[in-house]
Image 1: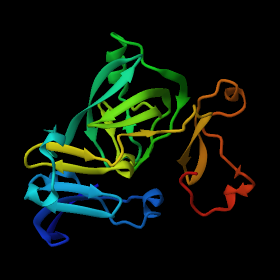
Image 2 (image 1 turned 90 degrees about the vertical axis):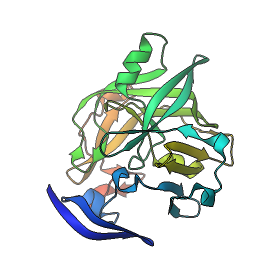
Image 3 (image 1 turned 90 degrees about the horizontal axis):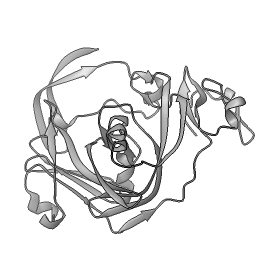
Image 4 (image 1 turned 60 degrees about the vertical axis):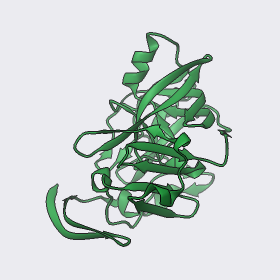
Length: 265
């Protein structure tokens, strides 16, 4: 990786000067999206950022009144580290017992919520968490390739709350990161506003809750060496038939070995 200095960077009508940036090869898995890079929260610390996926707009301002935000919807947002990574509190219920989790807002992660395994271990001291399955494998792919093969955990959350918005029947794998995260899939259900100036977080949805029709998956696919492979096998009966690293050759009659590039299905 190399560090470069950009003389000027424009986002809409806003100009930033003398910006430090990192440069490295994104590889094919990111090249397929045809983008040139991504920006971090440290660039936006002097602004209020609103992400509206429905209208495909990102709004940057220093005047909160332009966004018509209701102070009653505001949550505390904590900025951590030199980058000013935004953290907020969310809640989830397990056996009718509410828990809070301090999570990073990470729009570079697709799913709604990743439970940190550190948090899982801490909560186990007080209350059972709905663990659906445990296995060994890898699934997450980032800019530096696939994660290492290790123990993986699949959780079920009957009720997950972000502000006043409830997600029902959510199933997802835990993360080996030190903190939990909420990601960009949440943007499909409402408008997210990160007020870096006043350290406030808003999530506004036209729905009070979202019911997910989801069942325990049999396995997770992932991507390695330009091939679609088996990442994690959750179903005990399948573990004698498929395992981590097996190439997925065909899905519903479609030969995947002839594709030049693929990342998921």
